[in-house]
Amino acid sequence: MFRRTGFALRPMTESRSCRRPLRCLFAATMLPALVMPTTADAQQATQNLSFGGYFAEGKFNGHSETTIRYLPVSYQWQGERWGFQILTAGLSVTGIGNVLVNIGEVTRAVAGSEVTTEAGFGDTIAGVSYALDPLADWAPFMDLRLDVKLPTADEKSSLGTGEPDFSLQVDFSQVYGGTTWFASIGHNFRGRTDLFPGLNDNGFAQLGFARQLTERTSAGVFYDYREAPAEFARETHEIYPYVSLRLSSNWSLTALVGRGFTEGSADYALQGQLSYEW
Image (cartoon, rainbow, N blue to C red; front, top):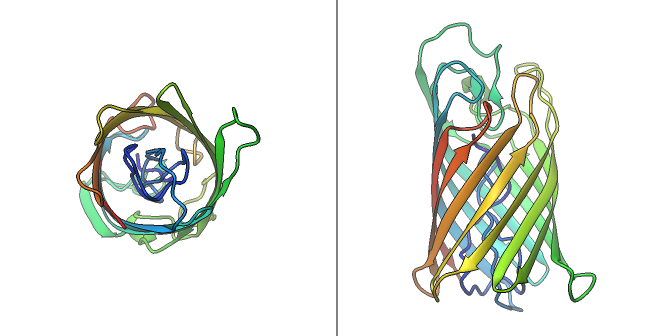
C-alpha cells in the first residue's frame, strides 16, 4: 500500500545535489520510500523538481480488491547540510471504501459492498533534513529528518485521515567495494480522529543497496518493513527492486516494481519518477 518516507528519486549516477553518499528521497505521505543514494561531492545548493506515478493493487487485509493510483509532484532544495522538501499529489482509490490510503483496512468505514472510485487531492507533505558528519572514517553517513503531513485529502472520501501527522527518521548510507548500502529507521506519529478510530503510531525500517552498472545507469533493491498503523491493519513486509537512468546532466528517470509478503501489503506495485535537477 502507499506509505511515505521521502520526496525525490535520485539515480546513483553522479548528482550535483549530494555532497556524500546520502539518502535522496522520494514520494509522499503514502508512497513507499525510494532510496537512491549518490556519491558525488557538491558544495553549492541544488534544486529538484519531480513528477511521479504509482499504481498498486491488493486486498490490504480486507476482503475485496482495492486499486490505488497516485500522481505526486515534489520540489526539493538541498544545501550542504540542510534540505527542504514539499510534495502535493492527485489520488484515486477504487474499491468498496474499506481501505484507507497509508493505513489499510478500516472496517467501520463502510457497510456495503458497492465498488466505487474516489478521486481528489492527496495529503501534502513538508519535510526538513539535516546531514551529520560520520563519527569516524569507517562509519556511515547519517541524515536526520522530520516530515509533517498537512491533511489536504478528503477524509470523507477515505483519501486521508483529515488530521496532521508527523514522522522522525534517521538515514544511514555508506559505500563498500563499489556498492552503496543504505538503511533507515523511524517512527510515525498519527493524529487521532473520531472518523477513523483505532489509528496507531508505528515504526518503520528499510534496508537496501545500490550499484553503478554503467556511467548513466544504476540499479538496486530495498526491503521495507512497517508496524501495523491501526488496530484493523497488519504489519507489512515488501521488497522493491529498481533501475535508474540519467538521461542528461539535468534529467533522470527511475522505475521500480514492488511485491508484498503479508496480508496488509499490496499484492504488487508499479512506480516511476521523472526528475529535473538544477
